Amino acid sequence: MKFITYNQKNFREIEYLRYLPEEEKTEIDIVSRVIPFKTNNYVVDYLIDWENYKNDPIFILNFPNRNMLTEEQYAQLSYAIQNAESVATVNQIIYDIRMEMNPHPAQQMTNVPMLDGEELKGLQHKYRDVILFFPSQGQTCHAHCTFCFRWPQFVKELDLKFSMREIDKVIAYIRKNEHINEILFTGGDPMVMDPGTLRKYIEAIIAAKIPHLTNIRFGTKSLSYWPFAFIPEYSDEGQEMLDTLKLISNSGMHLAIMAHFNHPNELKTEVLQQAILNLKACGAEIRTQAPVLKNINDNSQDWADMWKIQIGLGLIPYYMFIERETGPYEYFSLPIAEVYRMYQNAIRESGSFAKTVTGPVMSASKGKVHIMGIVKNPVNGDKYFMMQYVRHRDYTRTFKPFFMEFHDQATWVDQLTEVPLFSFAG
Ligand code: SF4
Image (cartoon, rainbow, N blue to C red):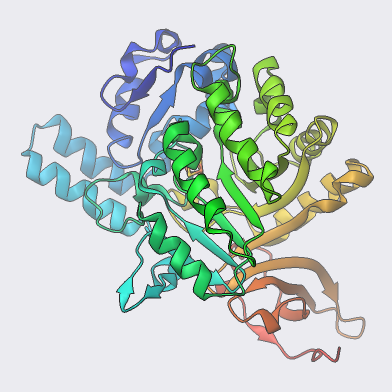
């Protein structure tokens, strides 16, 4: 199967766009100059219901629309483009809008580690037992999600990227830090790498025989956006990819795949199901995660369906996230309280194997904050959120419940104040 990619420049070649009025194509053209746009022939042919494109979750997931910018941002940019203002002017407007979109949420730039006085700009070391590795060749995806919190990775002009390719330095850093038991390949999407490149990284890590490094994890959306990558019958590189991944499980290490699915419609194709079987035959444990997104998966039924289908396919539901404060945040974000209620309804519907999900969770600057519940003072009726860190920069602060004041419309933990209702005694 040939991979055909569509971006801001050639998207009008997508045959199905005949369903869209010209005006909407112009809007895609304008907004996709700000929000990095990329899709491919699998997404377009297999995942989108074009006759109902306006409400189709995968269309919204891939195709930017004008409501993802503010009225003012859209008006300023479209005016500059349509009045043929200079390239420098248009680029400046695009840059300014992007900088208004909080390109690096949760202070990610502060987690860059040092090795012998050198900053390792392709690594993040936020939690003591896991190191995130951003291989240079994996800093794009098979398609781009319009809500993406890693979107600056795809923008050439934003000099804010993480990436590196010197695996020897990564290995040296891990060797020196004996608490690290896991390397997470991330991006972008590390599974966009050609298997030959991935193999060099994997072989080097296995050959290093670091006793405390026991897990290799991949954060990927390739199962959803290009499952052919794992099917030898459809792609020349499929067998090499599977053989490379098998090296990990054959070495005795845990091969963990964090698969990103936003909607049940991504889980229904035969191609995806074959790709899952092939990965599991390589010894992979596949866990799933995604944020709750207004306009895409903002109801408990979608989540219950997703988890039930995933469990049936042998996948392990893992994280339900609250959307991060970045990109077109107004378009996608939902109040914490609403997401919590959605989680409760969905998990009740999903059967015993769905208990593996932790949700809802916010990836905040200090760590991953889990919303455990909404509680009420029986005397005065005041409500509070009960939360805990399930990951924290300081691991001694994890799994200790705390209380935050309740606001029905708050969308992020920073909008709330901690309340000393009880102190943790265990
Ligand atoms: S697949 Fe992940 S990294 Fe890539 S665009 Fe989507 S959310 Fe971002």
